[in-house]
Length: 179
Image (cartoon, rainbow, N blue to C red):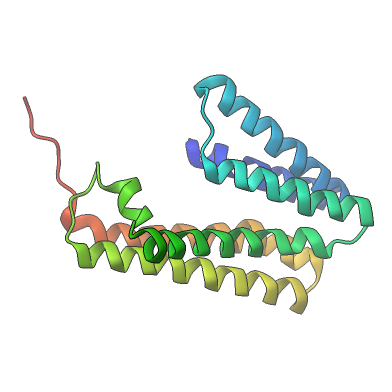
């Protein structure tokens, strides 16, 4: 259910684009993301940094798209987000000696260092490739195809990648002992 909540703005963006155009879809995505963050804040009194980052980027790139009537900006937003995530993971690892993937998951999974490193660099590589792929589709195909890719291709590839990561982690996941 959380997954559907997380992709809700993308689904609304897709639907608004199919019914109207890229500009209405962009406005819908901005409003939906802001409402999503507001809802998370209302329910939990805490919003993840990734969610704040996504909101900031949709406001900046979506705002530029609407203000300048140029869809190029909204098309760059996913790439900037992916590359920003990759950069944060790299800086944390090499600048602060902190594997953020490990930090997020080590309470649920006990794995040796080489596995955590594979996961970290897998995610970095995934984010870099997704950024490149987004630009390729944005510039190589129509806006309609890019919007389809954003929903189905991007999310589909993310699901496949998460499954691959889960398979890598599966041997290290321990069930909680019964009391």
